[in-house]
Image (spheres, rainbow, N blue to C red):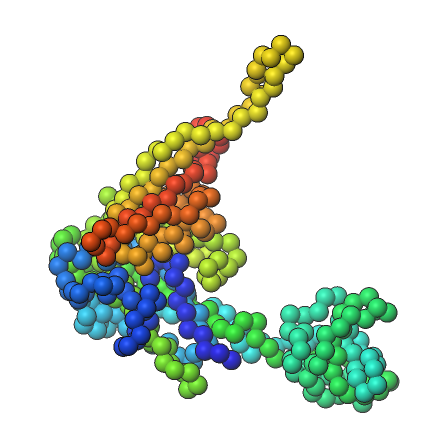
Length: 365
């Protein structure tokens, strides 16, 4: 298998990989992106994630590496932590999954045997897959699938392997070990209510999270998060942006009910009132309104963001569910990201349409 080590970008916290001599967009943190000062730099607010004092952050790591080692840093100094503060939980058993199914065996061609399943082919039914056949007769053994074909007589697809079929067996089964995916999903939970509060709301102390992935086969990979500031008080003066998905979106598996969340200083204001209507014109050219739907469109504007965080927000707007201050919005337009002249920061803008309008198109509170 190829090495897989990913922390999907469209989650609550952005991570970058750590390489000494390979600077690109994926291994640059916001404050490293043509920004000469270090993490302790003054006036670095634009590069910091603000989290409320009660916020629990959940995100996923996708990997086939053997070991994940996590660390927490406060202003660059490693901190001891408990499982209440940070935990990593394996959510899947994708690699080395096993399956066994009842089958029907038969001759395909001279020296070849066909496997027929009562229904669709299993997901592991591919060329090169190793299978173990047992039928209580002379077909017992482990074989490699050499072909996938359609059997007109059986009106279904069959798997073919090279071995002379011998009749007389009964209750045939096919067993195999396979990978549902070539990686496992690990869920990381960081609960900030167990973190010490800073001395004051203006304190610039920052946390960073590190995940080192190691394996006996693959090259080690280390991820480091953008700086995170633990708020003295809740982030009531900021826009609260939340997003989640259905199924798998942008590599994140949302069957585990993960909701992503960030807090930003920005503006959300009414841009235009729009609508859709159905009308009727009679023989005297008199126009009648049959029904109408009112639409509310707003513009989300956030200034002075690193390009990596702009990308994170652009991904957020493309998710199935996207909320600002607990109101759901959708967009059919891409976000606009404009670099500020003479600066490494950017202005972010996207037009949103409110999904449900209470008291207008819906009774939902």
